[in-house]
Each structure stands twice: as structure tokens, then as C-alpha cells.
Length: 171
Ligand SMILES: CC(C)(COP(=O)(O)OP(=O)(O)OC[C@H]1O[C@@H](n2cnc3c(N)ncnc32)[C@H](O)[C@@H]1OP(=O)(O)O)[C@@H](O)C(=O)NCCC(=O)NCCS
Image (cartoon, rainbow, N blue to C red; front, side, top):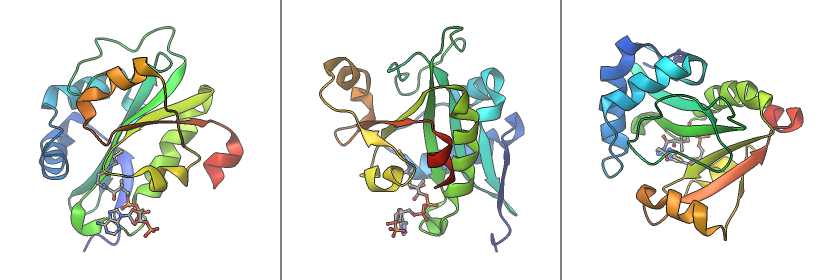
């Protein structure tokens, strides 16, 4: 049924459907609708939905100051003018459609936007490090400041970074 689903920009009209997905996929990492609305407002290009007959996935991403990922469920107020790193806040695919490679196109799209920055980072949860390593992300451990910043993401949270080289985007 979702065989023709494709990635497109997220609009504020998509937020109710995106929230339903987020609540289903991240019951222990809840975020409010205002978080999605604010990301769309401040950095539209980084917010995508996977849309077929219904919304079956989403991506939120935006620039940040290096190694300062925002706390879960927190508003940004603005994208800092001195932002020097790209950040993938969340990628989620409807559980029944996971494991079919549907996220890859959307992730490549945001990694192309990320090329304006030297690095992209994210907080990996649910043991997804292996998945992210396909896109060139590597774990950066041993930084107590980062560890405290990602505390709210749960015990399995791992801070990852990648160099934004064109070669890795194409992998
Ligand atoms: C992680 C996620 C975004 C990957 O997207 P995807 O389109 O499912 O990715 P792929 O189809 O390329 O699968 C990648 C790997 O995810 C694994 N996977 C994750 N969930 C899966 C599922 N429900 N069924 C099958 N495989 C799954 C597979 O092992 C696969 O690896 P393999 O190809 O070596 O077997 C998606 O599975 C998802 O939304 N998971 C829940 C939310 C999440 O973890 N988000 C990322 C937080 S950092």
C-alpha cells in the first residue's frame, strides 16, 4: 500500500500525523507538537516526511553549535548564527515499514544539506549504531560534557559524528 511512498518537505499540516508516529515509535522519549512546529519554522529544509497514502516516516534536522545537541523536548528559540555543525534530531519509520530501506533516501537528502558544515552529529538510540555507521557516522565517546547533554535520551544513547565528505553521502 505504501510502495509509492516518497520523501517530501514536512509542513505544519503534517504535525498531527507525525505526532501519532512519534508517540508510537518513541513512547519513552516523548516530545510535544511545539518541537516539530518550531523546527519547521526555523529550518524547513531539514524537516521531511515519508508520504504515501499516509505519513509513514519523518526526519527532523537542523544546524547547531558543535557538540551541543539540544535536550530532548526542548525548544531552540533560534538556529544560532554561529552554528557550525549539522544535527539529525530524529528519523522514524512506521514500524510495519521498517527494515525496507525506506529511510535511506531521506537521510541522503539531509546529509546533502549538511554539506555546508564540516560534520554532522546525532544521538543514536535503540542500538542503531550499526545502521548509522553505513552513512559514515562514528561513535565519539569519553566526552563528559556530551554525556551530560544526552542524558535525557536514555541509557543506550550514543553520540555519533560523521565528516561531511561528498564521498560518504554517496555511499
Ligand atoms: C532506524 C530506522 C530509522 C532505519 O530505517 P529503515 O528504513 O528501517 O532502515 P533499513 O531498512 O535500511 O534497515 C536498517 C537496519 O535496521 C534494522 N531494523 C530496524 N528496525 C527493523 C525492523 N522493524 N525490521 C527489520 N529490520 C529492522 C535492520 O537490521 C536493518 O539492517 P539490515 O539491513 O542489516 O538487516 C527505522 O528502523 C526506525 O524508524 N526505527 C525506530 C526509530 C529509530 O530507531 N530511529 C533512529 C533513532 S537514532
